View 1 (cartoon, rainbow, N blue to C red):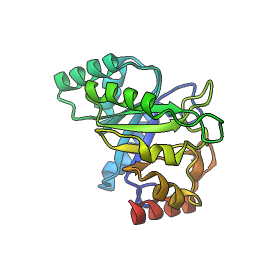
View 2 (view 1 turned 90 degrees about the vertical axis):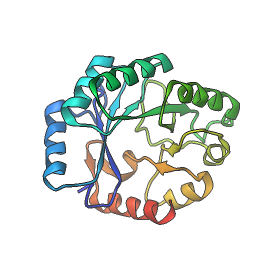
View 3 (view 1 turned 30 degrees about the vertical axis):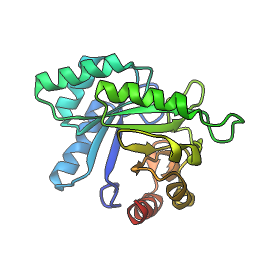
View 4 (view 1 turned 60 degrees about the vertical axis):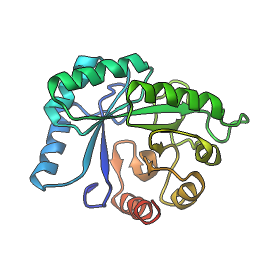
Length: 212
């Protein structure tokens, strides 16, 4: 369904405590369907505070295209991941999620602080960064929005992906204001945390392709 919606990528969440967690066996069945249908959908493994070897093992088993780090990992952790992928001959892109205050909080986005963080990860070899809203005790998929105007002002040597509270209804405004390289959605196209709505997914993808 996601592939048919014209989305460019699908995230497979391997964070066991998360409400969108999929085990490796389930992920294998998803990847198998994509392979059988010759889908061009990019598969992204989403990891939170995992071990380097486990990330590499899952990436190799599934033939993932990208790895997204969404926990408390360090730039040095990314360097070890990159070295490990190179040693195994894995061709992976790496995305780092950076969490900021939700846009409804009083404090404005601290551009200097976030740009410093972006540069730390760029120096470590990251291919893209994803900006999401921070919610205590949660690692993404919260439905909270980031400051779109602040996002647009962020200087970054690598592509910026906008996440956080995006829906088919607000995506047009978000893209026009934030000017991201790409957009990421979870709760905004769901009927509940483990089920995506086909109509919402198709609408979201259509707007993204029209404006990006």
